[in-house]
Image (tube, rainbow, N blue to C red):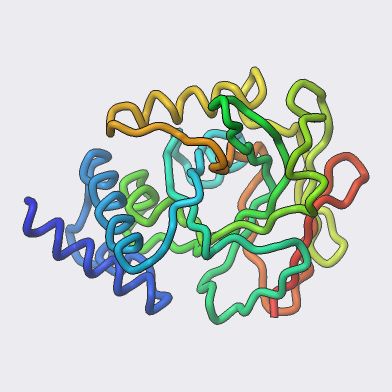
Length: 248
């Protein structure tokens, strides 16, 4: 399957740049098991890195009650984050670059020099949210990098904050001022540690680990929300606005 996987990765790479992700899953009878899906994700990542992109970290997804219910399947799954897809709070996002744009509000972790969690902060995760197969599968989700299309960071003060590593709070998402969802900060019991522990164990099977400076998305307890042009997206921790972006 090596030659077929190479051809498939090149197709996925072209689809990514054409903003038409995952067209192979619309092919009749096409499906991937989890091992094949991760192999494809890794092969596409290698193509992106060879083209000059830089891996900035990972996402852990499909763990919280909102997305599990929405997708009808449970993870966890892993995806890559890329430096060129990281945006600052207040970013204006061109909808044409994000087909089927949907967003999540969730907490992210920054890995410190000692390999442990150095900070925890809220972000907006951006998604190209499209399943092309006859039904949603983890294979399609994984092969399409967890649908990740980047993140929007909070302001600089949050990026070194450890306030919410062991403190409860409410995470909420508002679009154009309307509350779409709110809940606990972390999708799994025990806070951020279970997500990071699962990711490390998972990466070890591929001979990798997280490294200092990388960002890890810990997953969301909330849902995935489609947004349209003209949307103002805001993520709050308790009543404090943490990060925001506009879709144009």
